[in-house]
Image 1: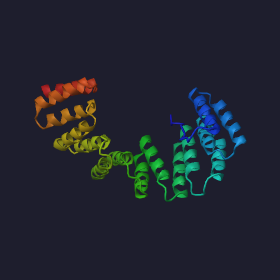
Image 2 (image 1 turned 90 degrees about the vertical axis):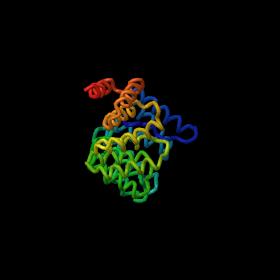
Image 3 (image 1 turned 135 degrees about the horizontal axis):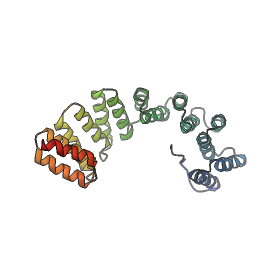
Image 4 (image 1 turned 180 degrees about the vertical axis):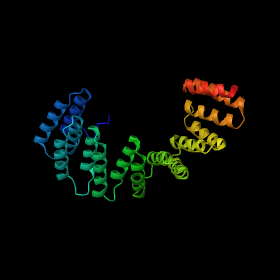
Length: 264
């Protein structure tokens, strides 16, 4: 379920109301949460955090007409180029499983705030999670064009390009993502996947070694490393990597499969 948490500032009465509503949602008491938020907004219509959460809660219960009304009301209290109302409406539509409409809302957020990365980033990231690579790629690329430059977005773009069969583009995205976060290993895993797709065991091994330098307890990386070592003819090293993968909790089925292949 899409996270309903809203970023909050210092403690005060409005924040207590929002926090209470969040607690009610966690207990599946959405109608009470909506009532509490509406009561709060009658007291202070300018409470942006309360209205943002109300939009999402209404999406969760499937009351999309009311969610649209509250998103429009939210826009009244924000600048014309603030993408927040359209982002929140997109989240509400997602919660109601209206994915194409949610994407249209994220696109509207991008159009309303042409200098912000928020709209295309959200649309691209969400599309990638839905498995819609063709929807995700242009939106992620637009967010990057607008200035997004972090490991998460580059990893998402690499994955999308990989699914689209663009190995060169995927490698470029993963390498840029790895450079943007020297401590993270996700983009190195992506580079290993690209190398495997190309049948390049040497590059795959180098990428898995980079993952393990950052996450020494990654069973998946040890399993991948074992595959690469086996392809390079380093059977004993591959067996040691499999032993370590097993110790670290890697998939027992995959460990057994690789052991059987080494025994042939």
